[in-house]
Length: 317
Ligand code: CP
Image 1 (spheres, protein in one colour):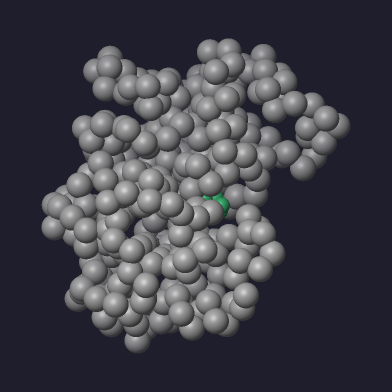
Image 2 (cartoon, helix red, strand yellow):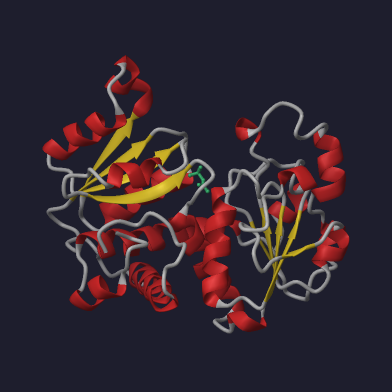
């Protein structure tokens, strides 16, 4: 694995290998096995041009727990503020000996463009524009598998909210199609749902109450107001009334249904406090799995097994 840019087109076997490895690393870490030394001698740079709490912190912890040196680039106080290009920034840090860059960027395709000129370094997409957030997709699938088992074909899943602006939604949909999830429903305001290409194979359901009936997992999405043009959502109260997940609504889902949210949450906008903090929410499991998935991805990039190298194709270039 040279880079991880997207989950689109990633073979099922490769995706499952990453999930298996993340699970194994999580189990080892929880049983007290030291993972330090696995990435000793490597240097990982978190190069975030957009804000992040979960992704940046979990990559930092994943790299540190595996013994890599970690450099956290702060775009707000860096020479990018003086006009230095993203590529010159990457080349400068590469010259200091960085082996792998974890990059978040506001623009679609920005990480793939940098990967063309990475000078031998590996790049991991930590979220670019609305295009892809592959490690979030992986950690969501790991969480789903832990709670619902690996018979993905038997699962009914619902995704709710602002899919139009969501890179998380795109990576989740890519992964769920690859894993063969039985039924994928989507629900949200018409002007926040993308075109049929993005939603291929999904069933659009207008009413959230109807969409929730019998589902095994509910993927709630953040309303991404920072990416919206003015007026896409007229009223947050109306949004919550029509698309907010409340305990009463959640009772329509299957017994034991789980609720996922990538964070950060807009409480009272897309999700009620009682759901976010309730027994069916697996949101903090997602966070914990994020560290394990990022360990697995860093390892795949920096210490690839010979057989793993052949399993990763152009999706990871
Ligand atoms: N889910 C996610 O990407 O969260 P952060 O923006 O906090 O990294």
